[in-house]
Image (cartoon, rainbow, N blue to C red; front, top):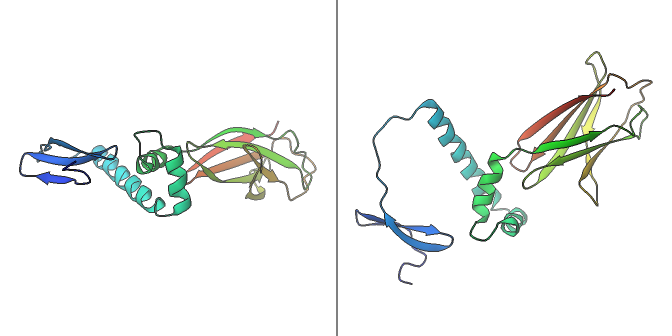
Length: 181
């Protein structure tokens, strides 16, 4: 009751920390004067970037509310946002069954993230690696799929390569490439 809401150094021996919304009295951490390795510095920089991302994204009410809604008991929206920063999205499936090379035909993609996939981009290349078309997918209103609608006519799609890139809220891309049989 006395320490509620406080955090910081208490004398030279203790610190007050916030844990799950409560103030906790703990021993002051021992700070050692030592050099960090390049790998340690890289991890430290990633955590700094994750912290900046979390602080920034939580200033946007719709994302703050969404992170809060998904946070489990004892976890904060900030912790969830930091965790989200470290987890890239993944592409589960690329369905080309309905794509035969005609404009208007659909390519269906299942892309997921621990929080949110924000966009999916498709690039279609011919067997020689020349780009035929590209564009953003549209999220199905009901369901998990992202739909790409072809815009150019192709007489043959065998050997065509689809490069699909999914992005999560922190902006991390993941790329999956398939060749149409």
